[in-house]
Image (tube, rainbow, N blue to C red):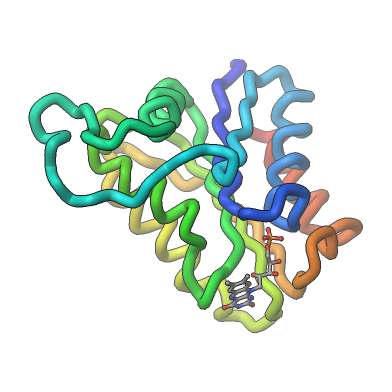
Length: 178
Ligand SMILES: Cc1cc2nc3c(=O)[nH]c(=O)nc-3n(C[C@H](O)[C@H](O)[C@H](O)COP(=O)(O)O)c2cc1C
């Protein structure tokens, strides 16, 4: 069955390591007939949440930027892929803004399948623990969220260093299997 797949590429580096892994995931998912869209978050305007709770009224945010469109796409998707580089053992600001701004409609994003993609310079076992916990913490708030896979792109610092590494193949295969 064909699925609607939304990839949120959080790195500010277009063609960076996590973005390349997103492209491989996308390639795999498209090859198996899914409808796939990647959003490069840096190209969107998403301000941080102001916690004004204007959204409590009807789910509309007081901030008029691109987050409304991103939330529409998250709602419509069957599968959501979230990708971020490890920044100080956490996620990056682009991804965090999207997660926080989903407060406007987080209860309207039920039953999604989630995949996570992470990249980091270090290779230690624990380098991605907090980053993964951030993704999992978000999904834990959403009704019926199911974690389906995680890609760990470790030991990559310069943009493009991920090319030729096993994680690229893993992302492609994971995409094929959505
Ligand atoms: C602000 C910043 C913070 C970073 N923090 C970490 C870190 O805590 N641990 C680590 O291993 N790499 C860290 N890195 C390196 C990136 O995670 C690494 O270069 C990664 O491959 C970037 O992914 P990208 O190419 O998708 O942007 C940091 C890089 C930046 C710019």
